[in-house]
Structure formats: C-alpha cells, structure tokens
Image (cartoon, rainbow, N blue to C red; front, side):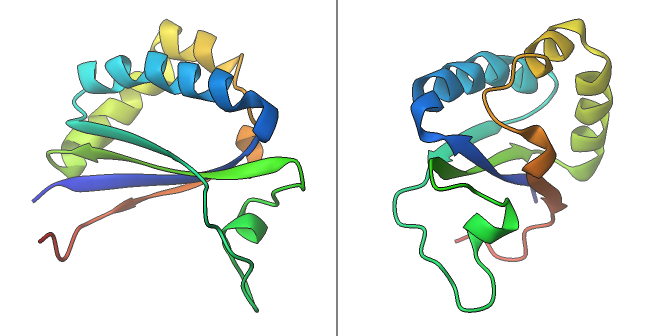
Length: 117
C-alpha cells in the first residue's frame, strides 16, 4: 500500500499563480525522488469550526487561502529517502528560499492509508 505525506498551508490570495508555479516546478523533483503522485488543492469551501479548523491550524490571515496538498509514495521507506534528498538537493534549497507563503505555519505529516476505495 502507498504512503501519503499531507500538507496544509496558508497562502496569500494574491500569490495563487506564484504558488501554482512554485508547486509545478517542485513536482518533477519530488517525482524524481520517488513520488508517484503530487496534488495541490486551493481552498474553496473551508468553513470555520467551533473548536478548530484548517484556517486556525495554519493561523491563516484574512487575505490568505488555505491549501491542502499531498504527495503519494510507494512506501514509507521511499518517502523517507526522498525527504533526505529533498533536504540536500541544491534545486530544492533554491526553491525554499523563494517560497510564496510562510513555511513556518505549514503543517505536515506522513500517513499510512487504511482504506483506499
């Protein structure tokens, strides 16, 4: 079964196209490192919750949109190896210096699928 790494971030609404371009440039590198799928989603219907919600999780400001992304890998081992390469690859380092959002407020984690229908 695959392994999924998920991400949630707040991106300034004005940076939508810059963000899309940034992600489209990063996707081939993740695939080179072993990812089988790379998906970016721009928030469309992200309601406020009573206790918590996506916006609060990333401290989104009024002018920011929540993005939800995931990368699929064949296994956790492939994901772990990819992350090592990501941290040392000069192309990724250069991209990290020009992120179109505040990466400190991004949340992420690795997930083992338990149902995929």
